[in-house]
Length: 253
Ligand code: NAI
Image 1 (cartoon, protein in one colour):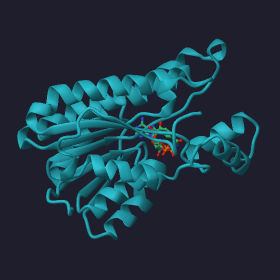
Image 2 (image 1 turned 90 degrees about the horizontal axis):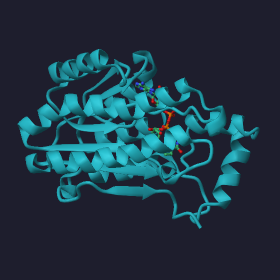
Image 3 (image 1 turned 135 degrees about the vertical axis):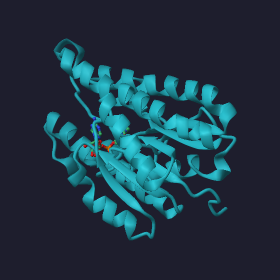
């Protein structure tokens, strides 16, 4: 079904990887796009690609974990593109380490970007959604929410995002707003290049090894995840609220 509601969407961490693919998918649905990332200049290529699809797009440099930076970013979006009523909390970082080696900054930085970031962004955007009586929130969780060696911080944050999502669904549901989470499995992006380095493998070897463990026998692409975001943000998904969709090529065997 064609998308009826055309609005302003914000995607965080949209300069590259999954965030960039989600921005493109939302632009194809006719939404104007605000692409938030740490460095505005890093969003340039994605902003151009989104504009080429015929919608308006702006890049914004902001740290989602910083309250002042988030307030300024959301005000800027509302003033230039109109009230944002779609929010995709996608910005993320890894600071992997086994527990006995995990430092306090490793823990705090991961919590700050994933959890505090999603909280600050959502608190700032919900006022426009509630006012419009329409909104879509999509949070990026992960299969790591179920536990993953070397990722105590990240697993806790990604599980936390599932609880946050369900609570948003309950609180904002009466105002026509839905909140859902996507939990991707292994998606080939720059984020995992650092993981490959850490375990001493080339990126290609790392992808091949991962694929043998996945029922679909391949690793995922950013577009695999973007398709789920396009569904959750659509008019058709109005009655789908508080769900976690695993996009992982199958469950773990
Ligand atoms: P990526 O590392 O390629 O992109 C993440 C983007 O977030 C980068 O452009 C980065 O600059 C931005 N970012 C980081 N901290 C930020 C901050 N404080 N404020 C604003 N922007 C910030 O990562 P990828 O793979 O595209 O991941 C996107 C999301 O999907 C993340 O939340 C990640 O945890 C999640 N995910 C990724 C999986 C994968 O296999 N790649 C699997 C499951 C979840």
